[in-house]
Length: 519
Image 1 (cartoon, helix red, strand yellow):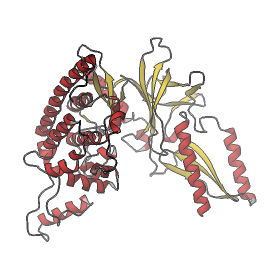
Image 2: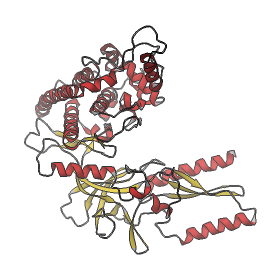
Image 3: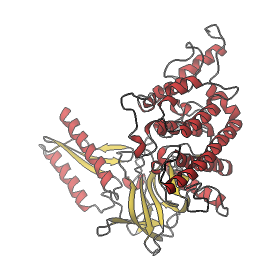
Image 4: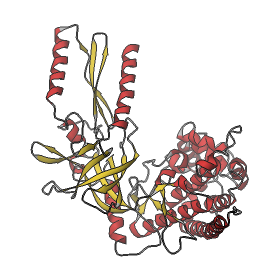
């Protein structure tokens, strides 16, 4: 038993490396062998399917193994797990990727070829979306204009297989909506402009089919527990760089300001809530406009794969989305009710605090105090409930926030610290919903939002009481003040951006004189 487990563990690690190093890999096959016991495995995006044990010491076991190997030898590249629309260009050290021009039922099957110039994200995980991102150019474009090509296996909104087959992946649909709303306008901020978005297609038996979960199995086995995924290819502009390429805190604030202006406008105009504000989803774009001295960089909010319509009913389902250190408290807890713009702004606060502590770029990361573990480290340790409980305590008052979080900021980040303070004040100290912690230890069961809510309801319905009126969850109450709080948040980040413009001007002037500006 232990040898079988060890063999399977090794196969899992090998398969993870295959996904990371073979960009045209859609799914993977594998074999484990322990003595005379052999099992075949199919690794798909949400699990592993394995054959029963084939004992090659028995005639029946040998027959089954030989049959499996013969079937594999006759498989085409598609059935072996490769994407035949991707071709390796060895001399250029690049990939040629054929993207469908239309997302339809397959009656029109024209393709556009893109040549990758560099890879910015590999599929390094064993399961999930297996997202791969490239900087690329059109094969027939001699100007060399670059685009971003994103390849991922998305979960459609409707997981019922028959209706999901015709469902465009969420991010493609969201980007198309944004494009339709803003196509004829000149905006003050950058946003992902979709060039093309479609479901990937495979040539099988002389016809094109959608590359989805059913294409892997070639049949619907009736497994209701099987996740249904569709592979999508999305091409967008402009091309941005990672947020940690900023030179100083003033540039970072300008990037964050642009990103949140984009967030707010898309929410108001398109009715889409982003739901994943994180370091990897806010990019930096050089500004070559007339105001480049004051604003040398722009921000770009990307990755709308988790974005949902504000009208979409998520009440009571406890849906979680986002990136762990930056997730809001209610998001971590899986609290009932819809997520709101306040959850995304709360994620922004945690992002600022994270960078303020660990450094906004590689140069500043060297200044981290490694001898004194930061309180903020707890945001990536333990369960989601543990992290939520930790954040409730840290965010409960200005004193707790200052001592546990602001005190860990690097000394030169005065502008970031002021911005974090203003955002914290708007989110957690708004009149009528101050704090983040439920009052009385009798009501709050550590690490359990559900038990806390049940205790509150029990007291309200005449159950046993601790003797004093329970305080409602301030994070639930603050939703009643959402508009006023968002207005305060926008004013805070706009004021910080104005101060950052002055800092950037001084930075440019100082560089011209060969001196360092006072940040």
